[in-house]
Amino acid sequence: MAQTLNDFLQEPTDYSVYRLNAGERALAFVIGFVVAVIVMQVFFGNIIFDVICGIGTGIAFQPLLAGILKKRRKNKLLTQFKDMLDSLNTSYSVGKNTMGAFQDAMNDMSLQYGANSYIGLELGRINIGLANVSSIEDLLADFAQRSGLEDVRTFADVFYSVNRRGGNIKSVISETKSIICEKIEIEQEIETVTSASKNSLYVIMVMPLLIVPVTSGFMEDTSPIVSILTKLGAIVLFVVAFLIGNKITDIKF
Image (cartoon, rainbow, N blue to C red; front, side):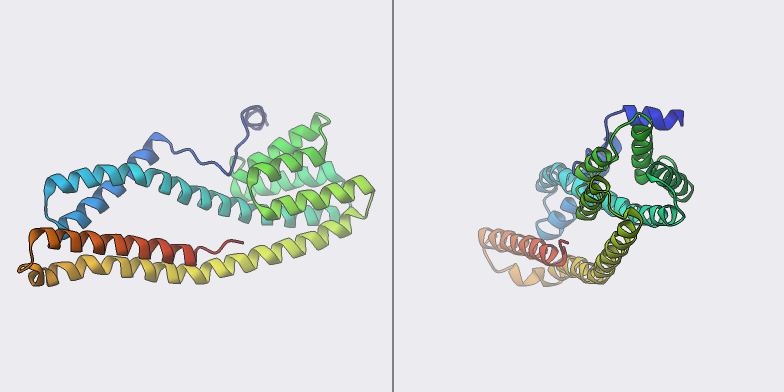
């Protein structure tokens, strides 16, 4: 519990913001640099130009990686939150009060995901807050705001309404859990289906690197300026096509 208390006293995680550490920044730069150098070498074959573009792309790829890791973190939190609802529903069903239900949920999630998992730390904060006579509604509202997840906000709002108005919390928690868990499962199924389209998009984007070396002989009779402009135009078109394709397959819930 001492480590949980220390985590509670520290600045809580804002899941809508992801700050890359030094290793992740280096990884993002290397990936962007290598990809840009390979593409530029295939299209232009000028090592100086390749390195310049590689440096620029390596820097530009860092916020992109931050966005990818932020989305991955939210998906993990959402999955863990769904399992937390199952635990809470079980505890309320056997007659536990709110403090006991959230204590059981913390124990269950710590066993399933670890005490330092996202949901483990959040439940640790909630339980320590309850032990210090903080309002459960305020604790859940804080978690919901930081999570940036609509399902967590819905749960916090429903819990606030039922707890303040003295409703049948066991029944409402059970119904809310069923609705939210079903919604999360549908979202995850859709994400699984669209991942196949995303993989196809990535494969298509690699094809120019295989086609250009084969067709480069057709550009030999053109002037250098026309050749450069044509290749630049092709790169821009492929980048735009990738952004549009990624936008289409990135479904917002």
